[in-house]
Image (cartoon, rainbow, N blue to C red; front, side):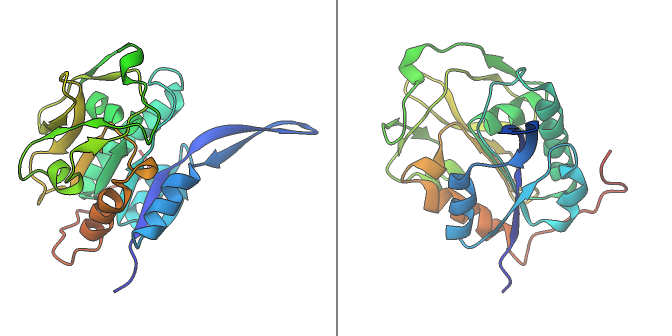
Length: 223
């Protein structure tokens, strides 16, 4: 069986050069390495043109990063990717900011400031309450995760359900209501930085290469 191609939504990263600042398409090597270790082939997608490449991919990852609203172009790119991935039934994993993009893409809202209690640098961990039978419960059997965030999901759109939360109620995982229709999950923690990585990225690679997965081709790509 061929290894599935897993797209990683790239971001515009400024790099100083002798002739001035240059923007590069980049993604965290921790995420890239985690995909490779799980058996996938990571593909960093160019910002602004990522949707054009989704038709060739078997899975998609939205990574952590700056708060929504800081980089409107990135926000728009990734929100469009969520909609297109759903239309095409491309398996999706959103990480930290990626979870919040998933929520906002369908009309959800965010808690703007949680305070220092949630800024836990991995491998500092906190308990996770996961719904039995959910993807979240499957990939975090010991119910401990490492988080690094100061915002969280307040509300989320129809079709999504919260399947994991922190002890104080902060949303830690959103899953699409029908995983057979569209395997998609957003997690607030950083699996690429803690002990959940093999299971979380292993889930994505497994559903991406599942022979039973149905894929829908869009009428047009890149709009």
